[in-house]
Image (cartoon, rainbow, N blue to C red):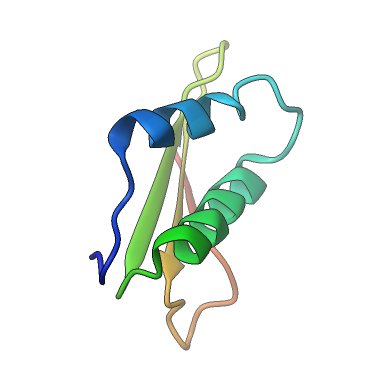
Length: 80
């Protein structure tokens, strides 16, 4: 939910592409993307949903929220 600024789709896609070959945890990617979006656009609220489908057939869905719910200690993960 944007406040005064929003992100250009092409720029967002190029930004996300830089994470393609990094060897970091999927939860860390979702949290870093969320932090960068909040810093750049200052949204009212934001949900980053990472749908990771690595080779091997085991996918992972990671969600990160801003502002974080009071009862949450971090992102939720769901294995599919």
